[in-house]
Length: 386
Image 1 (cartoon, rainbow, N blue to C red):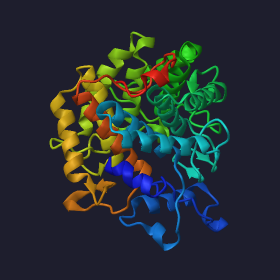
Image 2: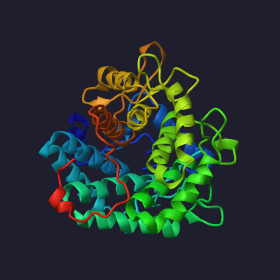
Image 3: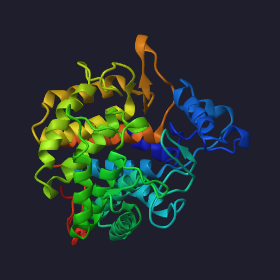
């Protein structure tokens, strides 16, 4: 609860690892892809928070609101902690009120430049929207908030209508892209399947088939289809793919085999002492986002009998013993004990908070609390039951 309490204390606002363009930089500094990337990477790689030199406030990050919403609701399901549920609902009400990316979905409040794409501030993103929809559906199921559930279904229908790419058969990352980025494709498939059920069966199944077809012989998936500058495989994006596939497993009998094959590769992202490595073939850096997503993914795999309980416990212990300092998570650790000192609300704190809640749920023997396609009738009467 400490990470969520601290996020609430600052009104759910804080620096983000990739928010370097949230500023009115002179046009010559942001006039091209490489210059925008340079500004963003300067912020990502700095061991101290250079934002303090020029910034006195921080943006909302909708994805963080969804993550903290799910965290609080899952803690409440597990423990009955009313404070956890209250904080979760507050985060999700702020999320519901956010219209920066329009009235349906959510995205970054700043311009975003990645290795493969640029999209301006306010562009709705499937990744933000997936975690938002998850939290909102959980609020309907566990707190009787049908208004938040309706908001989730409106977002899911927008994704189905706007981000589904034909004839290729996958979900696009954002409206300005037609690239198949596997984690985004499956997050889209999961969100429409969870929110809309049979209405989205065909698209969710085709999306899963598309990503399964691109699995490599070693069990990994490239970040995106077609190789080139999207051919790499990191820890947390791999975790998204595996967890989403597992949550879609009822759609296609080939999915469990793909998850099992992926799980064998995914283990390579964790060191003997539970270190969550960003890359499978490098010990450093340890990465908080990889740790948080790793806990969620390992919890999913533990329920399938694809990893040992000891591995999940070891990673969780590493996070609790070394991954949290001063009430925030450590973004990255490097060789010789070097680490970063920037507190990232979405990239680190929110994912680690959710991962710890998911790990505790799995270790207690409970089912995956992530939303599944179902009719949410009687949610108010069953709120709080687990």
